[in-house]
Amino acid sequence: MKELKITLTSHQKKAIRSNLVGYSFILPNLIGYAIFVFIPVIFSFILSVMKWDGSKAPMEFVGLKNFAQIFGDRIFVQSFLHTIQYALLTVVPTLVLSLLLAVLLNHKLKGIAIFRTALYFPYIASIVAVGAVWNMLFQPDFGPINEFLKFIGISKPPRWVVDVKWAMVAISVVSVWKYMGYYMIVYLAALQGISGSLYEAAGMDGANGVQKLRYITIPMLTPTTFFVLIMLTIQCFKVFDLVYVMTGGGPGNATKTLVNYIYEKAFTSWEFGPASAGAIVLFAVVLVITLIQFAGEKKWSKDLM
Amino acid sequence: MNTKTKDLRIPLYLGLIALSLFMLVPFYWMVISSLKLNKDVFSVPMKWWPGTMHWENYKIIWKKLPLVTFFFNTAKLTVITTIIQLCTSCFAAYGFTKTRFKGRDLIFLMYVTTIAVPWQVYMVPQFILVSRLGLNDTHLGLILMQAFSAFGVFLIRQFYISIPDELCEAARIDGLNEYGIFGKIVFPLGKPAMATLTIFTFTNVWNDFMGPLIYLKTKELKTIQLGIRMFISQFGADYAWIMAASVCSLIPVIIVFLSCQKFFVEGVAASGIKG
Image 1 (cartoon, each protein chain N blue to C red):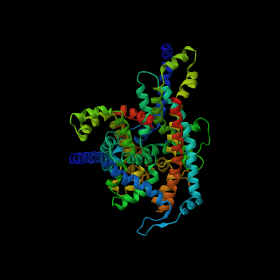
Image 2 (tube, each protein chain N blue to C red):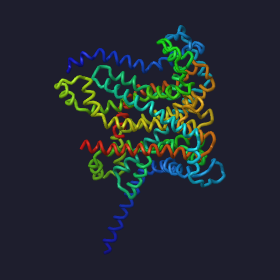
Image 3 (cartoon, rainbow over the protein chains, first blue to last red):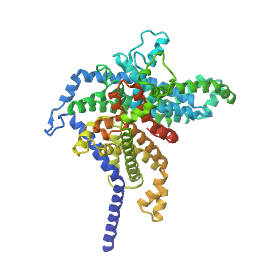
């Protein structure tokens, strides 16, 4: 009896010790993560149903009033629509161009890495610098882009970032240019996973390059394309920096996006309630897209099996 | 097939050269404009090669902007954030993959459920929290708010899973404790994943704009991105100077990128496929 008791406690001790050891590994990250990420995430839901300006005055529960307020706010609705407009203008061009670049780069040629570097470079360049230079390229009166357009015979080129109709197009052009290098690398990795024997078999059947692309490459890349599509769409809904540095949301509110709206509500007019309601809308959009991603991934993994 | 590839080689090279040049035109324009006089940046017709190089633009912005301070601030933020991120992520990844303890799966679930939440969703409450801790407008606040990410833990964890448990078991039998196994076996093996995470954190923190924009108000604390932005709004019409400042802000990233581009590319591929 006595012996059994001793072994039990030593067993328990061992369990406690292994628990402690396990926790000691995750705690440094867990503490930081809980305080600076997890609590704020929960708090953002709470804030969205509260009225608060961040002062010492207590929060006041207002139910769904913040949501009613932002959905009644013309600027919020516009910001939301601008974000969708931005997504529509950028997602498909980025996807198609990055795929084409990847197909071009997927050849075993000398010096191919140099091209890969050049095409990837815009992605790692900072948005502030990139925004500054593109603002000048797009300068409506003497900028090189409009000079070029005039040269090829367009006498009245768009006024780009100062034109309500064209400002978002200008931002989208920069976005496509900046991000396609990144997705090109994602595609390149996927291309390298396609077995060469497929192309050889198609070649023996007399398929040409375009046919191979159409009937082998693109179908084999479907899971990657789906992944890129999801990532790009989420990225579009989070856009802030590029808009902020290129147009500041203007002219008027023509390029104000969802996150620009959240930022302004929170950090210039200190209305944390509506800002958080806007943030929850962003969360809902991203959640829906993520759920679609899960459903899609399930499908692909089943197809593969 | 080989002969066909050979036939295609020259047009392919030409196409790739044209494409790369086209993609890099904005950077070229940035550099030549930084060497022109402010009034000549938009001269019509455009000059693709400035007659005289005005290198003094760089001297001027060096005087007008506390660039050294901005660089130092950015480097400090980048290095400290990366180190904290790296160490705590590796530690946690080991805990989640190679040790067993009560509540492990529950805690991991907490990471899983929050990884997909964009920072923009919780940036407001996070800012309130950091301000309440008295860390608004400090580097520490900015470091703490971005040093702990689920992404880092996931990335390293993904790699540690591929390290066979038998390896750890053998070391355990040899008398190594968990910290020994981590320090002597798993941590050194995880270098590729750490390189990826380092590159990611480095570029993210170095290029971050919105975080510093929200948190840093004192001029002496600002990062290079904020500093350049401030300069642009102050000297909006001094185009050449703005371009010179932009070139300066890109140089460190170019150096790091060119020296470790292998890791950049592999990192995108690895994290991209895993999703």
